[in-house]
Amino acid sequence: MSKNNLYKGFEVELFTGSFNSHIGVSVDIEKNFSNFVKEPDNRNVEYITTPEKDYKFLYDKLITPRKDLRKWLNNKGLTIIPSSTLCFKHDFQFQRSDIDNIYHKFIEDNYGIAVATSSVHINIGINDLDKLFAAIRLIRSEAALYLSISASSPFLNNKITGNHSQRWIQFPKTPSKVPFFVNHNSYVDWIEENIANKNMQNIRHFWSSIRPNGPQRPLILDRLELRICDFVHDINLLLGITAMLELRILQLFENFNKLDPLTASNYDIDDLSEICDQNEINAAKDSLNSELIHWQDGKKIVCKEWIQNLLSDLSSTAEKFNMKHLLKPIYKVLEEGNQSMQWIDQYDKGLSIEQIMKISIQDMIKSEDDYV
Image (cartoon, rainbow, N blue to C red; front, top):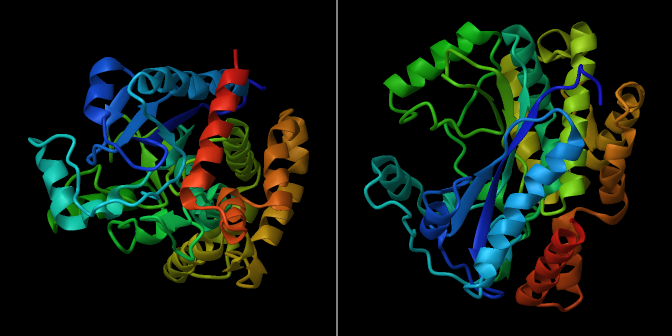
């Protein structure tokens, strides 16, 4: 790693339950673990890692809380479910984790269990505001690629949905239309306007594929938060996705003119916003096989090919920062398919959703046991 590497941190959401049902215990988890917090629906829980530059430390920060939680769950006959949606048969009653929380009540009343999904949010530290918003513009333009690599939600309510990321299809993006922010001031004005007109309840109620983050939003910002990825139980793959994201941002910092969509796209930013939204939906449906529109020239391109081209473009930057080895799991996904594609293949061969999840849960357990 180089001193020029960026800080990276994660917000990891998990589903808890048995091998055939979702069982919410997030309130008890929060009481027993200082690094876990409950989500609005009790079947969800989240842990947050402190920022690090070095990927070796990141691996430990990601896997240790999961191992600790699993030990506690085992004592209750429960486990971690790797799907990003409520894959097992369930009723459609929202299971409130905090009955007195007014914001949670708003979420339940307005969205119901559409928000009951699990994901991983990747935070990249960027202190310079101009650099931060340029990075947000570029990564939003390519967010569909990260979703496609991570897709892990083809099932819902014990049925196959036809989508590779049912999570991103059903999740209520809010506000429904998000512009490309040309600078910090345009972001602050937009946030204040949307809170004033009740499109957003508060600063947290900005649910999009990517957003600025920081200690005092919207005024004090210090990181980019990529929110589009499904839950990734393979930590080496998650670090590969993170490395691809970091390298792309580092590459942008070396050549703003060619990589900032504000100056490098054939589209004006209003059109580009619509194209990116549609790319995300296409990727949610068909992931690596989806047909996308490239933000630079408007040409149609298959997602898998776009990722291959991007990895090729990043090769010299990866060598410069000694990060090429971190990208290997992404090449494996391109060869073997993402988690959703593998699960769909197993389903087509006759395995039930319960059987598929049991295999994946055992894979998760093995990876945790192998880490000492």
